Length: 281
Ligand code: AMP
Image 1 (cartoon, rainbow, N blue to C red):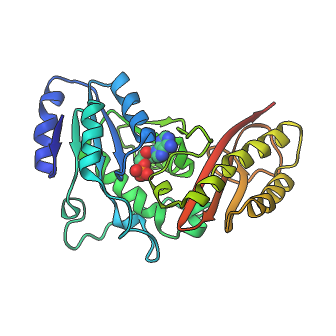
Image 2 (image 1 turned 30 degrees about the vertical axis):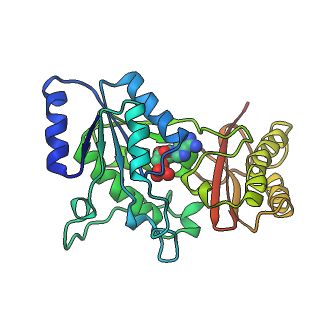
């Protein structure tokens, strides 16, 4: 495994693979790696000759009151995990490699970025779009892997890649969960032991919504009920619970075909998000 910290080093590490026309798979992360991140790497390794993992805590996707300063950083442990899982190249860029002095360019994906998480985290998806575009152009992989855990992010990145004709395939990877059902997340580290008992109720509530919808329940009514239940179960706030079209992310008043159930809740220092696919005839 080769560890590189500058764009120049990244380019020379990738050169032999490019010269050999080897396929390059890319997994962008913010570190504090867990089995969810590693499953993206496993997908990349299964299909591509060279797997590149980046670790960069991107300041531009955090709001002024969010947890950029406290976001878990554990480089040594991450590198050990990536070596164990045989990543080919790990890219740990310095901030100046990513954001040169006087940079002025931004990317906004209107509509898709404005709803759901976008309402509670203004500017977040602009920050995501910019870093993902920059990393894709630096690594130039044939395929990049993103978790369905961040479903809105995945949809936005697919839109971005299509709209800008970026020469890369985007592959979504299913969410990895703890046995309790809680979706793995670096931010789960913020949960207290008491909150850890409450957190899995988010997934269970999504399953209940799915069950009710499959029995013909109304999406809006089911989500209103679920919101009340989440609060009763101990979550301190519910940013949203909704059922949407899986590509436009528009709320669906009734179900036909594919849809996605999405939710974001507050618990202690954590904001937890989760989602589930649903298909109705
Ligand atoms: P992050 O480090 O949180 O920015 O996540 C990096 C990538 O890992 C993103 O594509 C996430 O969607 C993905 N990811 C995070 N948690 C999970 C999970 N539990 N299962 C699958 N993928 C995940």
